[in-house]
Length: 252
Image (cartoon, rainbow, N blue to C red; front, side, top):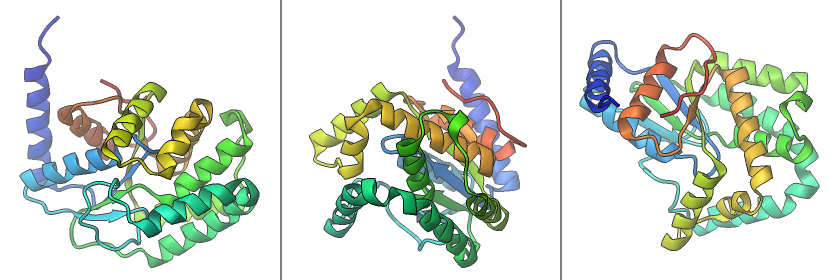
């Protein structure tokens, strides 16, 4: 089998040259469920931007979020962990109300969004993850999915307002479980990690429905991130940045 390394290095060099010449996208959204590798992908791309001479601005959980210096979501404070615990305990009771809450959240996110003077990287989106979780609680397959028209309009409006390049990360259940076990060993696993690890079928549905939302409503590129190396992640980013529509999943 021919050595892929020289080819990958050439492609990476060409992508960096393109970033130097044309600049990164104004707004990049990196989506995924727990342990999909969102923070690592953002770190890789932030480094690539810097190598190409561009300093990125990073926000977490929503387009209108404040500037964040965090490079990982593992160091959560007591209040964040308490909020996760309360949400998961009340979710079975309140899940029918959450699509309405998500609709309002998305509208506000669009209204409050302000463009950055620097290339913007948004890591995760709380409302979209909650929506995927709600859908996975109520449905078994994509064929069953029907969003309220008001929610669809909010998604379309948010995309028009923010104009993001979107990557949605996906990984095998075995990969997610391994990553969560590694977090447990470091004492860094949170309540959502454990929630996802407890039920493989539910976790896979949640992930699949998040991919569906991102591809259908945000024009995302679907990336199978079972331990892609940094060069492969940069290639996936390049496909997202140059894509004109949904594509087949990217994998190593």
